Length: 395
Image (tube, rainbow, N blue to C red; front, side, top):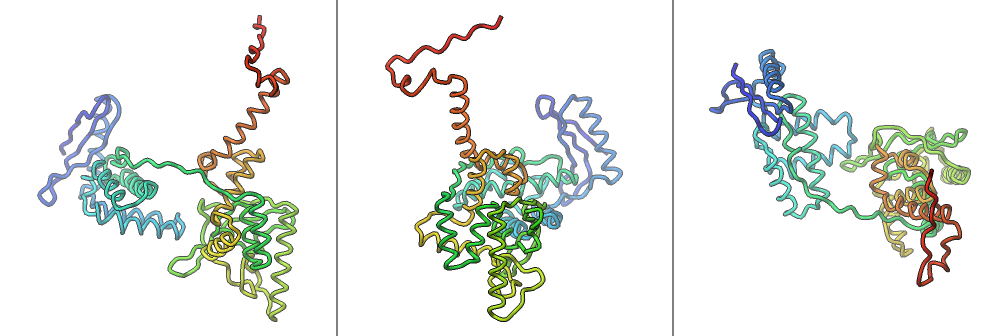
């Protein structure tokens, strides 16, 4: 079996093994190696052995479309239904028509960059194009692990940069106005707004809450499910991070929830029915068996906020919880856990503006601690500010 070592740059090598002919084309299996020429030769020998023993397929790697189909099937058990719907929509609508027929082992970074330019030209936002890049990068990473290609061309592609906008959140007074107004018009919406503002939970997570998720003794609210609507069918599934989190609730929220539970029982009695064994916390059905839907909360909030002249949308309540928490001095890891972020770095990136505000407060604390009254506001107004204090050099 033939194999070659080709230098691709400083201490970078490509090792290739001939595996036959198919469709009039010469077929090779290749890998990129970083190191010395001797290390590349050892890697070539190993690749030859893998091909001969069947550890690496000798046949055509297939097309980009073949890979995407196989990758989507492979990740389905570990993703939410909503995520899979969005992934498949991106693949079928945007990626396959453009590069689906390209042989996988001939896909280049240039092909991907051309795809990104076309998508931008069609009006997709840079953020949307980067999501397409993430799909391709993940699928191609899996292809490398499966031995279908030697390297990931998405590593060398250049997706568009994006400018992150500062998140907007309602003020404390606005949240209080929203809850007060909703109480008179729609108590269920009022409960959803209050829970969203205090817990920072996502819409689907709030809609999936049942009364069994409230631990009255430990004063916690357990979040381990999310409600998603696909093709007009509501379905409970895992949270976005596929993990459970228990959110602490204080006495005021506990009292609010107790009042909400009593109202739900009262409404059931009023129409002569009984609540189901484990009713949904947010439900407009008399027996509590049917949950509110995420889009319904969004629409109800939008109508209420518009009537009150308050800008924003329901997701702004999540931003409200985060910014208030960070502004109060809570550490980022605690805030991240409460919001259900997969990693505290997500919290740092999204809520950098709140951290900057905390840094300004900290600057004032440290400045007044170090300098005390030496630099008061009246002194700062002087034309010639005093020279900085002379610190004694340590001996």
